[in-house]
Image 1 (tube, rainbow, N blue to C red):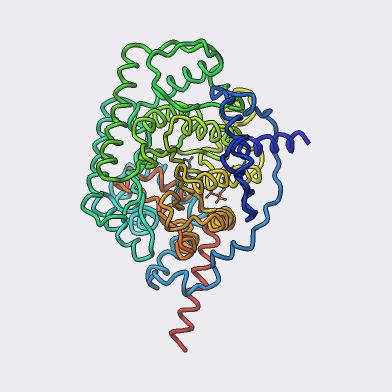
Image 2 (image 1 turned 90 degrees about the vertical axis):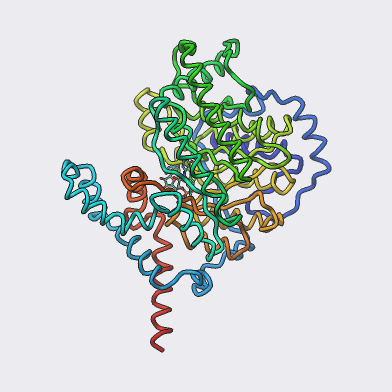
Length: 509
Ligand SMILES: Cc1cc2nc3c(=O)[nH]c(=O)nc-3n(C[C@H](O)[C@H](O)[C@H](O)COP(=O)(O)OP(=O)(O)OC[C@H]3O[C@@H](n4cnc5c(N)ncnc54)[C@H](O)[C@@H]3O)c2cc1C
């Protein structure tokens, strides 16, 4: 019962203050805006953005209602396989099927991971053989190339399928300013490379803040921001204007005692990191290309949000967001934080760019919380995560329909894709609305990408690229995600197999 109350409160928060009432994702009934806008105006002026009582929900287990798919979800067609895979050659279909099949066979994945992490890789001959094999299989399937030229060519090939590319120079975190500067060069080269490509081939350039700001500093800044959230009198002299980073429902167990203030050296490093991000924003602005900031784990995410929001306040202008942050819907406080950020951005007249994901750091988040004796910040059930994702998507789609903000719906979940497509369709958001982009990882959920593209939506593939040894941690994560019969590539494999069979029969007859 408590869970239903909490959920009702969250939905009320998400719905109450929009300029029109938010329709549930599964409803196509138009809302009445006139009566609610007065309520919204009054309610908004009373809103305390630092953590209003309105946004408070008890930390409790949320359960979900079963979501019914509206009739209009039939706009995504997975039955007409000829149409779905019309842009994919038979040889590519065969290779993709084989790679996804291999990635689903657990003993193959286990063996591959064991070899990759073993001392065998220290022997040059073994290393060359293993990397050569991976390059022709998993790397080709899940990565866009080893450098910007190869990534650009892969993005060009996506155009045949009506898709665009998000270029992600796949770097892991940096520990010092030197590696941040080196990484920065890679990001700048990526933005520069898009200028030689035809317009609209690349939709976004991706950045990981932990690659341009030392990880330890992100932890320190997150600690201080969290402490200030708990103790509003705590002063942070270096802090710039930002949207709210926490809500009353945000966990604070990472910071149990008062952190030391930043040293002058740390303050200087923070400024350097911010300057790196602002340089990327400026380059993106000049290339007319939005910058997508990835979300990472909760120990550093407050600092990432802080840097993203403070840059967005400077660069997101005239209803044209240049900087997009990422919201992880698997976090229990995601809905509250989204609500507060949109309201603050609205008040400042800044368009908000949001990439919505479920979240990828589930095990480490749960382990950390449990090791400190706290409740996990992640929804207790997968159903709650699904509901959180769908509710946040619904809330943002309503805002888009009203002309505010911009949204990247990054998911492989077919149900979420169908629901959002139906809602967007009902709201009249399609190709004409440049503010909505669906996105899937390169080599993953291709049938969903084609289906959404065929239905008239803008769709991008998130394309990691870089030297094979640099992207290896990313490839290992993909192998992990695709293993087993219940992996997210199951639908793709099934549809590809059926299409190959159909083509074979058509060729024979
Ligand atoms: C374009 C793109 C960009 C991305 N960028 C980021 C990013 O910046 N940061 C980031 O963290 N992730 C990012 N991701 C990964 C994303 O967060 C997911 O890990 C991945 O996409 C799977 O979620 P899904 O929406 O595709 O849904 P599904 O295919 O349905 O996957 C659901 C997954 O959610 C997980 N899960 C979440 N909550 C629970 C729960 N309570 N109980 C059990 N399982 C749960 C499970 O592992 C499950 O496999 C990105 C994904 C895409 C497609």
